[in-house]
Image (tube, rainbow, N blue to C red; front, side):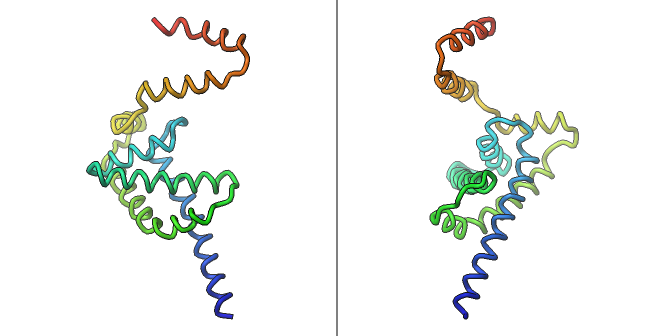
Amino acid sequence: MCGRSSTYLQKFFFLKSIERILDFFIALEAALVPEHDFVGRRLRERAAALLGLDHDTAGCSKKRLGNVYGIRSIIAHGGIIADSQVELLHHDMPHFEKDVRDLLKQALQDWPADEEERREYLRSLYDIPDQVRADRLKEDFKAIKTIPMRKSLHEDLKPYTG
């Protein structure tokens, strides 16, 4: 009986952790990423910048955010969480929750109340470099299967090349 109770409690706390992950990322995305592209990258980079972390600490924090964000994506899109990810959550959840609290606290202290000023402030923390956008565009372009469509897109882009 004790074995079952223990397993039941582990599952209960795991399910609560999953709910918390979704809630935390809803709050973080609403606070730090008003844009709709490169969400995970913006979130990680802006989080590290907002907290003013040194290089090593920033790397660790961004990795943790990325790992938990990956789990969030699996949950949100109906996937199955691997055992290794469950173990990662067990280890990282307390650190992740502290990161979230620190981020939201710092964000509320630092950013302007005006929406456009807030967006500009967030862009000043981190915005997607042109090289990253160009790399994404190249990958998307390579994914177009038909040559006529590639040629058409090439023509459409010519006016923007100056």
